[in-house]
Image (tube, rainbow, N blue to C red):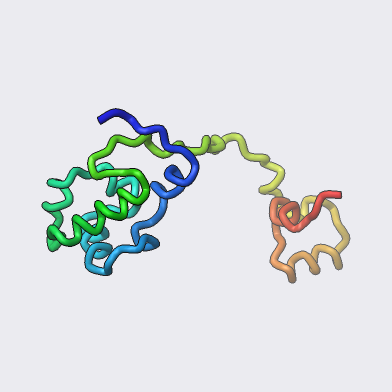
Length: 132
């Protein structure tokens, strides 16, 4: 089968946890024990692969297939992998956020007040500050 263009609701549904789906407890436990956590992982399995999951029988398979059919999907269907958001490289961090607030040459009472509030680094101070 070819790759499916995932649009809107289907793309969101594929990333849903199997625990949030309207499946019987038995089906959810079988899928979970097999290491399947999202609908995307379930869709990637064929009927035979699902039937080889311990304690997952024909009735559970039919329940899963019915749920997938409601979403316009079927077992073994090829879907595009989840698009990962680009990560910020570890070296692209504002190093000023790692400075202790004492290095800002603030007054003693202000430093103590920040310390009482658990603010010890410039980054923590910046996260508590609102922009105008």
